Amino acid sequence: MRLCIVFITSFLTGVHFQDCARRAKLYKRKPTSNNKFISIDQHPFIVGLLKTFEFALQFRCAAVIIHKKWAITTARCMASDEPSLIYRYWRVRGNTSRYEGYTDAYSDHRISSVYIHHNYVGENNSYDYDVALIKVHQLFIGLHEKPICFATGFYKYMNNSSLTLLIWKEKNINTYTSAKGELESFDVQLYNFQQCRKLYRSFGFAIPSRKLCALRLSNTECTSGWGGPLIRRGILIGLSSMGLECSADHIPWTYTKLSEFNEWILTTVYDLTIVETK
Ligand SMILES: *[C@@H]1O[C@H](CO)[C@@H](O)[C@H](O)[C@H]1NC(C)=O
Ligand SMILES: *[C@@H]1O[C@H](CO)[C@@H](O)[C@H](O)[C@H]1NC(C)=O
Ligand SMILES: *[C@@H]1O[C@H](CO)[C@@H](O)[C@H](O)[C@H]1NC(C)=O
Ligand SMILES: *[C@@H]1O[C@H](CO)[C@@H](O)[C@H](O)[C@H]1NC(C)=O
Image (cartoon, rainbow, N blue to C red; front, side, top):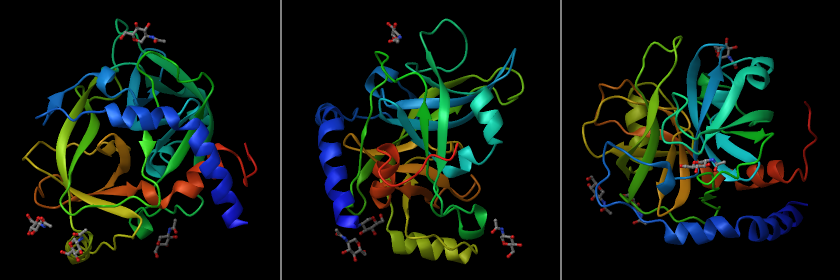
């Protein structure tokens, strides 16, 4: 059964994810993009999750487009509100480098289904299985809304490799008035996993094997940003998940390891084994 699923999903991946593979090849890292505001046209896969109120917006997390109808983010993010409120008030905002205001040509998508990984239990196990999929009503077909390829089970992690982390930098901390934010990029470095685990163990956390660790290369201000994509050469390898207080600059942050969730993502997206419960 498992083999069969792998076969079917690799066939579907071939068909539906071709475009992202082509774009991954074209994707070029900017020479030095540290702590710089960047534009959506170079990173058309990132979107923002916003809770909309009548006269205000509240920023919740980042998410990443992986398919015309689907975005991926952390379970933490999607477990942070009631499902009924998510379906009613949350929007996936794409096609924009800034999520405030009404001058930008952003494109909002209502959420039709949310799938939080069934093994996710929250903080008790250091946010293991911190992954969720979001299906949207309106397709991601804006000029700057394109899926990214994610790391497969065969992905090779290289020690100390240079990565890019994208986040939505909030510019208005009072989230109950209208939120403002801009897309920002950071250079980070993959961190030895065993060392990372050891470090966290000394603070009382057990980091599960379904995580990656990466360290910011410069002393930047604290920004965590759940769901922010960790990218290497145009491939999505991680999603910003958990870390220690911001003052701990030398401590790596942990990310959901995408290559551990291929089968779950593909079976959910293509509805091969699961039954929709909504
Ligand atoms: C987390 O652990 C505490 C203490 O062991 C327990 O009381 C609680 O029910 C657990 N929560 C979940 C969601 O498993
Ligand atoms: C997306 O943004 C571009 C400008 O950056 C705009 O031309 C376009 O109309 C927007 N909307 C869609 C759906 O592409
Ligand atoms: C990465 O580093 C660890 C420990 O330093 C080592 O065991 C492992 O072989 C290295 N991996 C690669 C691909 O160099
Ligand atoms: C990775 O970086 C660490 C810390 O800077 C260093 O000790 C280690 O030798 C590096 N490993 C490789 C394979 O470059």
